[in-house]
Image (cartoon, rainbow, N blue to C red; front, side, top):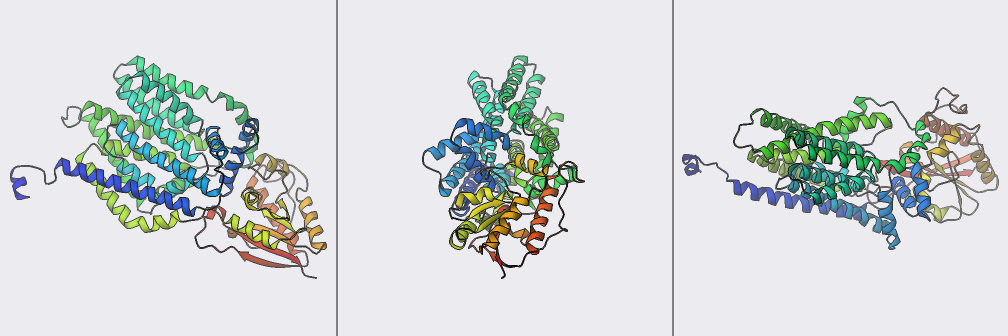
Length: 545
């Protein structure tokens, strides 16, 4: 050590740092593959969002799939992939989980592809901050378009960055293909594609390469115009008024924090530190252009990634404000993937930054692996256990009540008993999310009357009523007095779907409490924790006479 200092040589050689970086990245990749395999084995049954996707993909015809898209917030591409998958006879829960596993592994490959295209050795921060997160493991692998959409967004980012550096027609063709599929997997990807193209256009415009600027703009235009067939579908989604809620930046920030800190709370500060470091390095590169250790290509990459980060987060928040729906932490996975890749591309070019990435990776994985593994062993739902229990317990003539209505989407996938199923409120279609039917019920008079009639009929015949309810809302004590709201939008709640659903729940509970019945509760025990997204219990209601 003293000899190296005397010779004015660094204590740690560049080759040693590079080897340590590569080994750390490979080991972390293997760990993440293991976590995804664990989730595939333990994720279990499909929860309602996943069952919704499976039901759309397996509709009798393509025209029926296209018709169903107006009731779902995603475009066509992922449903076609799922249809191809199920047509090969791979429709069981485990086969569906394997589909999700393959998507997750493809996303890992895309992370490596991205940094290589951007001139970096390994995606160490992308693996650590994004792919290692239990949020990523569980929701990229879920049977929803999120994973495929993130995969295609990452490929499009890499190819756009490559065009910025090296113009070749094959890269342009590949980018057009990826960009079109990207926006046909997630509608919101059009905003991310805009940020990629805009960043590349800025870099090329600074070099006065106007032909390349025009070609980049053309890629965005082609991808945007490819979405035109969806316009009638989007226009027909007038039911979204019932799920719109006021959206504020503090609310969005809270969900973003939950996403960034999904691995552990301190990870939020790791994200913040690398964001500030990335911005600082970019500013330094732009100000000190004569600095010998920073090549022009490195400056371009840093500026490109910084513009991508800033524009993508702005456009994404604009998108969330426009749709004005309650966000979930997994909605932020695309922005997490983009930022993590940009961190790698900016910080990974510096030796000190590489050492910092290695230290962060080892420290975070060593301190959080056990808790992350536990989260990856979480069941997505226990609705299949409820269905199995009711197949054994409910008899012909009994009535099953899914409260709220959306539990019926996953329940009907697993239930094959003889008792009839009805929802709160009663709906004609239990296969997919039908907010259009909910909107119609909100605008109707006494929408629960058919349900009350069926409950009375069942109990008078000496049969039982079984309610499938969310465990978090298991109490059979109504929150509010029983009264029927005026048809929307004439009530004080206008078109608030949450208000009407809460009122319907109170009405049904008040109605049951007014009857001479005996109520028994059954919690569904499992050997694994169950996701809060769909943790259900069963309530037995029998006549007391």
